[in-house]
Length: 308
Figure 1 (spheres, rainbow, N blue to C red):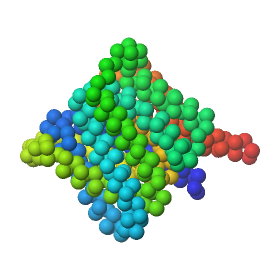
Figure 2 (figure 1 turned 120 degrees about the horizontal axis):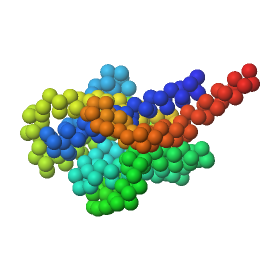
Figure 3 (figure 1 turned 90 degrees about the vertical axis):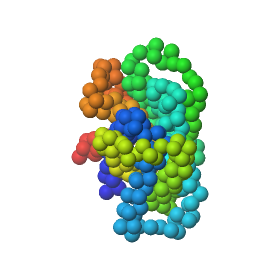
Figure 4 (figure 1 turned 90 degrees about the horizontal axis):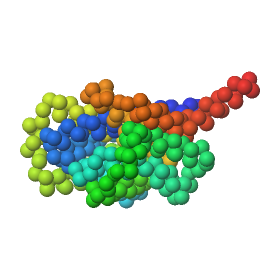
């Protein structure tokens, strides 16, 4: 039963990069109507309220666990919700999406290193091979197979902000593994989302953009609703559940699917063009994830059938 649950969470984890990739596409339009920090504050503020209602309805408030872990919970909110979004949106305004994507594509590597060093998670050749394959696939997808695109990149101050976002996201994942030894993924997601949204609301005051929220278009509200329910509530719940069950290193490799899902959503919804090279890159990413996550279970199943 435990083995079946472990396999199931690997498939549930596919929802996180799918919804985060969709959020990237949706946010590109939303921030043309509402300032970026205000949009982020609205997204996580509403998500926090939905999560709080869910927690109260299910009667799962764990005050003892929250009080014991309040420092890492606050740090998770500060890094993964507030810091990451702040660095991401401001950095995207100062550098290219390609630069930012390449920097964030290294997050599984650093999260795996951190998990091995500080959380004593497993490291072996299979994990290393999977990381290399998935990172290579991301590079192919983002650069469209053109080495010149990578070589000609011009790094600037916006890239430094993305490095700050990278540090925040890696810290968020590692802290989550420690917190969820005593606090459930639902409570963890709820508390960090509420704290992070409060920090975003306070910071959004400098934009003076809340008066633009009622003027959002129907498309803007639809995209915001998607980011609230799918990209915030569901994706972060699944992500935290995955970190708790399979560890930060294995869960983190799914981050390499974000540019893949972004590209696919742009193709199917917004009519963008995708090349054969990009499709090859996507396949490499999927193979890398398979090697790290599902492959051991498939191998055990095959061995079992052979014995029988």
